[in-house]
Image (cartoon, rainbow, N blue to C red; front, side, top):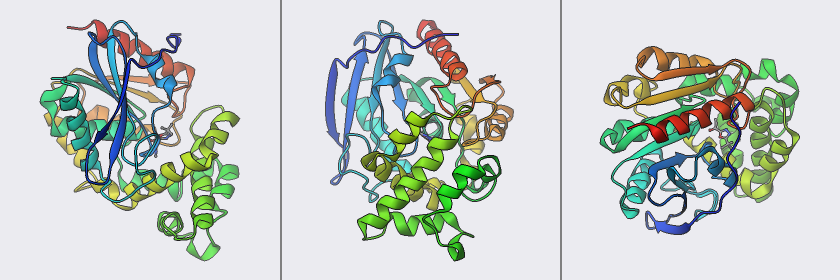
Length: 316
Ligand code: STX
């Protein structure tokens, strides 16, 4: 099994104003002369913790990470206005141009895989390769599975806590019920909903649960951005023009060297989506980790991702 690289500090950090309202925080680490790679984090609303740097050989890669609109160190915090998939796609381009990078490898898991597909299908000429994990195509069936019925059968205990803030007579549409609370003018109501929403995801992300992860997700500032932004994107169907958009547009990126890493027991983003993507796109290498769930920190997934970044660093 491959292990994480030692933690390094960024050699550069900055802010980029991407709209009248939003400023995003970015950092560069590794080797300024290395192969460029951009990491697209999950959620949306998850931000980039330092441990993400440890998936990349620091002499081979010039790693660019940034916090998407409204989360991490980006401002304003938890802001939903001017916050759509296509705003993020244009931010990625603004950042690429700002850094003077012509092309880069794109690395994204979970919502990061969704955004990687949307970005690469819009700007395929900018992508040297794609490393995707825990495939999420933002289709109604995936949202239904995780936020309404399905994952609830596997984690009925955690599900009880997720249901807690929502009165019984609103439980037939939990996404809407949560959206109302997460956008309530009452900060107490928002915070209670944000905590329950985030803890649900933390409780279901790994094959073997991790109490530390639950605590981190329950932290007020993290939960507020994560829950509000996720729910906003999901209520708006990811701002995609159809449920199948990301699958139908695979033709635009078929030629790009790519790898898909998927945990067999991923309950957040069940493997059926990765499988359908693999069927639509057999050219992409497909790796199923037999003993893992959703999280990129699980040993098998971590190992497969580090193997992939090493291979992409040495290719062409
Ligand atoms: N959201 C899945 C997702 O993108 C439905 C995701 N899950 N956890 C995360 O992202 C973080 C680890 C980035 C918080």
